[in-house]
Length: 401
Image (cartoon, rainbow, N blue to C red):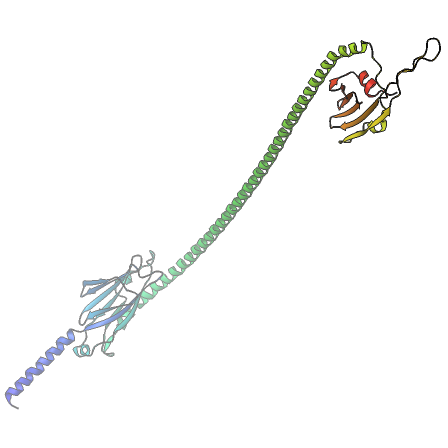
């Protein structure tokens, strides 16, 4: 092989080897972690990443399941922290042979659990990493350093036992508190239910009383309206009675006034009648016809007019034949013509009075007589529309032969 070609091949090989070494040292190692908070959530938790003793970054979200890329050939410490809980650390030594790094590594899976900080539990051991991960030649991959884990295993187990006991006590306390809180809540709910029941009962009673009051007010209004109606009716009846009494008094007053006027007229006509009686009497008037008592009688309760047909009578001559002084018969005298007297009697029944009307007439004269009997007892007599005395009425209108 020519020297020039050999030198070129050597340069290429060295270049290739150099590029391979750079590629190996530029690779990363993937870790997949999960953080669990005992008795709490991951809110407020964080992971602080230290590289070769220097703080590199802080991860505070998605810690339930997260991934990190660690550079090869470096020392990392991951500190898992949350206020009130014991912090834990994991150490990652990513140094590895170049040929192993060139082939790549399996992503490393791990989980970290943080427990609550207790004052009487010594957690100094947690100032150092609780685990160390390094390259394991036998596995040609990264894994836990078992020798380191064994060195702190007993301390971790002891503390874990103390923490478990504390957690049991705390759980018991929490259970008791939860039970007490549940009982208190139950009592509170019971008290609230009882208060609601009492409130509902009070509201129901209030509604009942309101209904009773409304019903009582309605009845009182009805009674008052009824009393007002009765009072109005009584007042109306009183006013009507007063009006009726006033009307009756006015009627009685007018009747009394009429009676007084009638009596006054009778008093004025009495002397005239007496003078007429004292005058020399002329020939006796014709005898009155026979009075029909059966038809002229007063029939009470009949509110209708009834009349009596005229009755004709033959009146005997009132002048006797002359007698001679010497005892012989007197000379013949001219006979007086017989007079025919007609009579008509009518009975008129009215609500407040009864009127008897008697008409007498001949060919030469006519007379009408009235007898008025009032319901309140007064009796008045009239001849041809003028007041007359009862004696004149008896002599002329009711005279018989």
